[in-house]
Structure formats: structure tokens, C-alpha cells
Image (cartoon, rainbow, N blue to C red; front, side):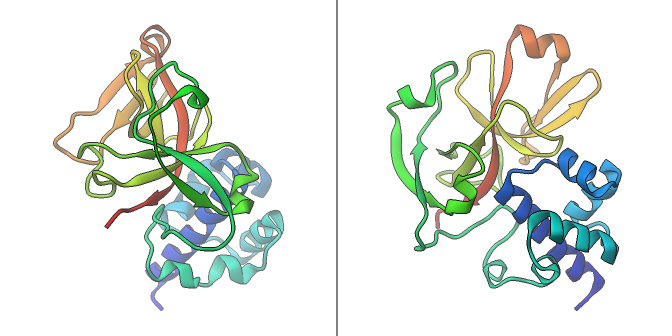
Amino acid sequence: MSDLGNREIMAKNIQYYMDLYGKSRKEMCEALGVKYTTFTDWVKGNSYPRIDKIELMANYFGIEKSDLVEKHRSQDNTDEHVVQKKSNKGTLIKVYGRVAAGIPLEMIEDIIDTEEIPADLARTGEFFGLQIHGDSMEPKFSEGDVVIVRKQDDAESEDIVIATVNGTDATCKRLKKYKDGIALLSTNPAYEPMYFTNEEIVDKPVRIIGRVVELRAKF
């Protein structure tokens, strides 16, 4: 296998176990003693960690080194953040057609379906599903797809998040953090980035309500 292929496998495996155990890049950097940019390159498949760092990661997650190095069967039909629905026992979560700003999830009545997530993932936090509307996140996320979201009020730069702006319904965007503010980015180039200063984040407000951990594409 090519060096690029090995890096991509490693990147997917690291991201999988981070999502499974609810670990951020910052937490991983602190645990492994590496720079944020170094770890980000691993997760993006730009570089490959040294064997000692692979062993540290395996020990940190309580897994075998081979779990990080080798391609798993589940990757044959999946891409990053894309997970096919499985029939194994797990935890059912609600899928919402829309999430209204300022309204607690338990009070939202627009429940359109349920999705099953692994019990190990469910133990790492509170999750919900949200149906994608529109084409702003094409080609990765399409109309009718469902994203699995971990409830949280912050995320790392480059994460896919669910956010509200100025009281609007929640939308799916890629988060980019800057010293003086943030940007919410669409993957569809037809849509302009939305930039917010730190003051606008408070005043509008701009709120992150969750981080996307999986995409369950509807075919």
C-alpha cells in the first residue's frame, strides 16, 4: 500500500477513536505531548506518526496498535464521517427535522425518525440526529441526509458543527477559529463564508450547539 494510503487509514482510525471516546484534538495533544499542528496533520492524513506515538495513542485508547494502523472492514464502504446504519444493538437517538434556536431539544416536536448509535459512543455524551436541508454543504452533505451530533457548546477549528446565528434555526457548517472571531463555512463554493467578530458572537448571538460526529447518507 502507498504511503498516502497508510496515512489516510491512520487518519480515519484516529478520528474514529476520538469520536468514540469524545476526545478533542487539544486533549490528544496534551496526552501525547505533541504540537497541535503535528496532531492535526495526522488527523488530516498529511503525515504519519512515529511508532512510539502510535503506541502511546493505542495505550491511551486502550486498544491494539493494529487498530490504528490497519484498515477495518467498516472502511470499505465509508468515507470520513460517513457511517452506514448497522443492525447491532445500540442506543436509539431522536432525529429532528429542524432544531429551533433557544428551544431545548426535549421540547422540540419536529421528530422525524430515530437512529441507532453504538453503546460505546452513547456513553461519551448526549447525542441527537438532524436532517440536512439545502445544498450549502454539498457535495459531502446532501438534502435529506442525517448527521449524528454530540451536544456541546464549543468545538475545534475545522470541525463540522451545528450552530445558530441571531436566533435562526440550527444550521450545519464547518467552524474556523481566529484570534478575533470565527467563520462558519459552507463546503459549497456558491455560498459565501459567514465571519463573526468576538463581539458579534456575543451580541447576535452566534451559538454552537453540537459537533457532527457521523453522517448517515440517504440513498
